[in-house]
Length: 76
Image (cartoon, rainbow, N blue to C red):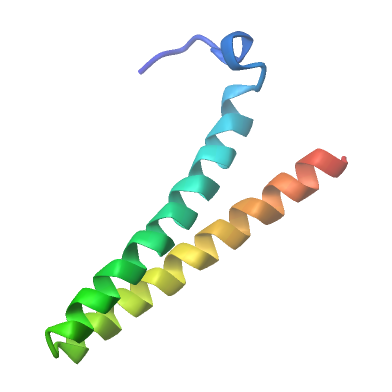
């Protein structure tokens, strides 16, 4: 595990970059899961589609929480 701050490369402290990355990963996952839901539905597998919908909802929640943290940190 690296112990050096790499924010000098990005211009953003690592911990802040990590929140930004997490929000993007959650949003990207929510979009990807839309495809997985459609694939399951096309194959008539409602159980799997529902599973992916629940996962998509959790990804959305993670993104919203990350955006809230970013909002707090950018306005303080």
